[in-house]
Image (cartoon, rainbow over all chains, first blue to last red):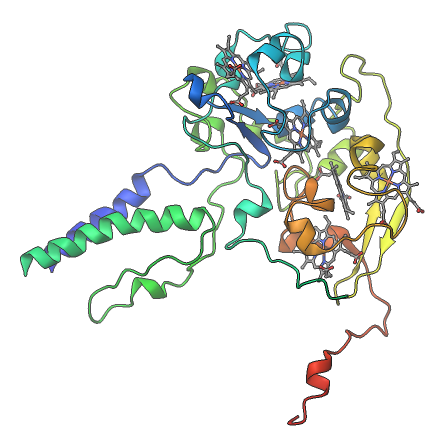
Length: 134
Length: 220
C-alpha cells in the first residue's frame, strides 16, 4: 500500500513539474504549416504587440491577411518578395528577415492555432443549435 | 500482492498527467482512476472540468508556446511591460483596447507608412433584439471602424443591411459572424464579457416566451 501511495505521490509531483499547459498571451498565433517539416521552430505571431503599432486594417485589408490561422499559406519565398510579414520585416519598417529566431520561436511540434481562443477554452465541443426550426 | 500495488502506482503515474493533458484539450470526460478504500475517488474531485488561468500575461519564455531554448525568445517583449499604464479589462489580453485608443495611450497606424493618416470612422449603432432574457445587442460601428476597414466585414461576414443577417450565439461560438474576431483576437465570449455586446436593457414589461410543451402538460 505504502509503495503504491509513494508512486502515486511521485506522479502528482511529476504533473506539477512537467511542462504546464500553454498559457501564451491571448491571440498569439502559432503558424506551423511547413516549419516543423523544414526543421524550423514554428513561427509565433503576437497580435497584442502588433495592434499597439498598427490597426487591424493595415494587415487584414491592405496586406490581405485572411482571418484564418494558417490560412494564408505564408512561405519564406513570399516573405522575401515583400508579401505578408515581409511587407514590414524588411529593414525599413521593422527589423529584417535574417532574424530567424525572432519569428521562429515556438516549441517544436506545436500545431497551427490561435492561442487562448474561446473555443480552446470550452470544456466540451461548442453547442450546436437545434435543427432548422424557426 | 506487491505486484498489484506496483501496478496501481504505474497506472496512476501514467493516467494523472494524461488527465491534465486531456482537460486542457477540451476533451469529453476522462476515465476515472479508482483510489483506495476510505478515500474520495479521484473521479469525484471538486473541479472536474474547470480550467483556471494560473497567471495572466506570461512572459514568452514561460508561456509554454515559445521555446525557452531559442535565444531570441528571451529578446521578445513580455506583454506586462507593454501594458503598463493601459486601462485594464477582465478578459482576453486584460487590456481595454477601445479605451486605450480613445485615451490616446496607444497610437496604432491606420497606414503602414504614414502615421498621420486618420481612419474612416462611422458612428452608427445597430440594435438587434434578442428573443432570450439577456439584454438586446447593440453593434456599434464606431469602435469597429476605428480599427477595421468596411471591407473587413462587408459583404463577406455581414450584408450591410439591418436585420439581413442571421446571427446567434451558436454561430458566434463556432467562430462565425461576430465570432470571426470575438473569441480570437477582439475580446472573447465569457461570463464577464456578455454585457459588452448585450448592452441594451429589455423593456420593463418584457417576459420570456413560455415553452408550449410545458403549457400543454396535462399533469401540471
